[in-house]
Image (cartoon, rainbow, N blue to C red; front, side, top):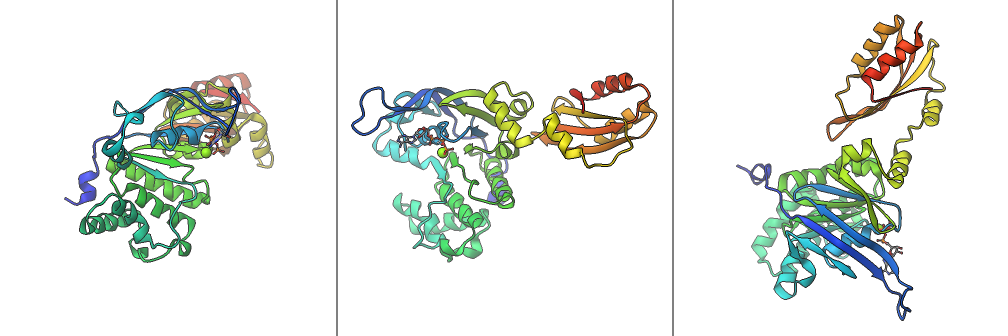
Length: 356
Ligand SMILES: Nc1ncnc2c1ncn2[C@@H]1O[C@H](COP(=O)(O)OP(=O)(O)OP(=O)(O)O)[C@@H](O)[C@H]1O
Ligand SMILES: [Mg+2]
């Protein structure tokens, strides 16, 4: 069996727990009470082997939260536990071991410009005192994993942004960590490259069982690869749960606002979207799906068509699976003799129905 196949069912590793974590940045020579509270009593679990996304606006405290995991920031109060062990109390060899168990990927890659791809990925191993043959074996394996084995001798300046991030990911994984921290890892990349990097992170998560904490301000990133999402606002976690559930029924205003600017699917926005689509007249309905049931678009249209007794036209569709549960909307035009009956039928097949 190849190494990859052996890892296809890798067991989940590395659970993280934030317990009442507060972080106040004090200005230099600051008077008491003048600090910035970046995290305010955050309690949150990152299940082992899952991808948890943390989303929030700029300044919400996302990076501060992520950086408490590898002690780039120390909580002012509260604890961060790795598999039940308080990481702040680790010192000496325990601290070194802890750092090995946590890899980090940065927004701007943080590669050494004067070193080749190979040397950049190998550097953490050299610092950790891993023997040359073992180090070379691991670097080769990782560069193959991220699809850059053919660019081992290139310098970062000769690579695209997406390739640089692949090097960053290989370097983060080279010590076989249990936890991968990604702070806006795709924010500097175009949409297509973002997809390919997110797909790579997903694969790594599945094949190696690595727990991923991913920070982003983009709901698209959350929808694309996360299992769980926590929404952070003003240093507090205001909402947390499985992605499909939070996206289908956001409970907090901040979540709704972030989702709204991502989906652009209010009645007014849909009205504008279909304004120029020609149709045979009649009522225009918006059918919304919250991931609570399977959705067969053709069957929905046929169902209403049968009732309306005249053609039902599909004007717009955005139904796509979130964690395998279809969410989104259909905009339909139907000439129905009995508009009330049509609405009733629509309500039977969709979670919410509006008339445009
Ligand atoms: N080293 C620091 N010293 C003082 N204040 C800081 C420091 N780092 C962050 N802050 C403040 O803490 C708050 C949270 O910052 P943080 O960087 O965690 O936010 P963020 O959610 O990652 O924002 P962004 O999306 O812009 O990266 C902000 O008000 C920020 O100004
Ligand atoms: Mg940040």
